Image (cartoon, rainbow, N blue to C red):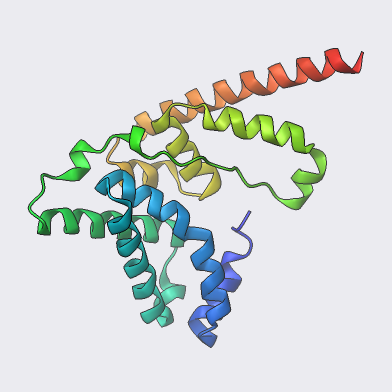
Length: 194
């Protein structure tokens, strides 16, 4: 996962104006931010513009990067505010209240560390990703924000305008469904091995 690399990237960007480090940070966050902004705006072109602007502003203010405690949370909140601001400036209803998670539409690929990848076969990883992608939309988005992007339950609750209890319940649902899928995989592998 990227969490071990982020402190290095932030320092390289803030102190050395390292464009390659910024490009790497951009590649890490840009696709997920577009998906999130699209779920609010229902317009992928505008979502791309807003996410590009947020990341451009991050580059412009790179010297302040070390003061940001959680870069993921900062970026998602920035995109949320920019998207809502855009919809209000266009005279639309508050999109935040009408957002349907069915429109997120992104297929998630859960990233694992090298050590974890060595322990899991490609087939098993593919089956696990399939199980993640079969989660209900809201559940999948919450799972991704917590497990892949490293946000805390309270941060996800604030970001999606939900209660912390709802986030906890959705994570519980995700974990139960994924545990059942893993159990099914293990049973299938046992049958094939014997």
